[in-house]
Length: 498
Image 1 (cartoon, rainbow, N blue to C red):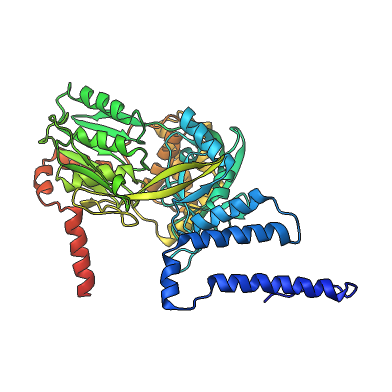
Image 2: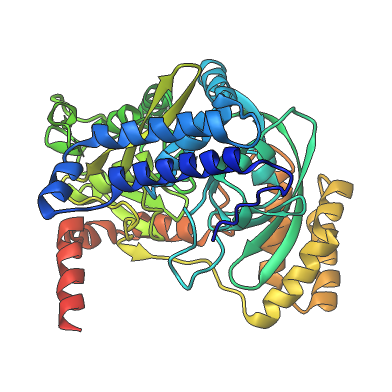
């Protein structure tokens, strides 16, 4: 309800004229927007110019009649944010002048000041149970403040400083996380339903790495951290180095890889696939529909070489293109957890000094499946141990105490005896499993230095991948795999049956 207040001292005629003007504007809006007939409704839906004219009229009216003088740029940015926000797509958004400038600088330099987290934020309320629209961590970037602090895929950032992330936009979240290197930003992290703990990060120049590789005895291991212009070349170098060894099989680790360039993903697939569809890009604009195929020459890695791909909730976008292509083509066996589920393509369009990012297409795997908001299920699910309610309470107290961080800081090169003594002490105090505590200490030690290529002792998913190749299970398991299209049809049939 609107309340109009006219001061008593004003003459009646101006008030009368003002009321006439207001009514005239209201009548104009009603005449412009009120439905009259079905035929007019159809014409209105087919004439978007009518709505642009209405937007222009409201813009002009605000400029002339709002009680205070308004900066037209502020109105413009609000309108742009509203239009793109109305799409309900977290990947489509207005980019202010500063955001466009920052984006251009990041692309040119390949680095920026921040905390090293790939994040997403639901538009409005969460679907499941109407939970607050907190920021979700899709993946930490290796060797960055967020990664060293132990933030994991699926964690929720519920507060930045003392402000709830449910109450601010994605643009505001990014503005608070990015900033001058050396400045501190304080976060509150929620893991699962109950585990909540504080994290203080010091911003750094974030340089996104791309490829790490090593031999695990007689098994080749390559981890793709991101998909950039250099990923294809760096992957090829690693694969060619492996060919000089007598390796038994290959593990391709795509965990916590939030994606990057589609062309880089296709390049990686071509090292394992010959000809055939790798990925399709579908848009409602016919000219933007594309199909990417495997290379014409024999792949760098022979087709009979066992190939296990590791995925988890942090595997998204370009990672899912690779995992989906290798799975659908029967070339790899997937181990780990269901992937993130980002099957859409975005483009950035400059607009004056500002701009916007918008979803223009979706990509489809070789079996013609789009995995957006669905993800790719592994052929073999391997999960890390879950915490009991009692463990969560004890773990929360331990994380708040910072005792593990302090121990690693005081003993950067701790001996086995020192580590075991410390683990026994905190086990007695917090009643947590010794294996869990050992893994937490090892993780903190790893984060305190350059990340190791792999950690076989505590990585149960990597352990399973090694076992599949080493014990000769691969060839039997790969025969039992199904395409994503088959899995989707089975899921639909089960849903209809129930």
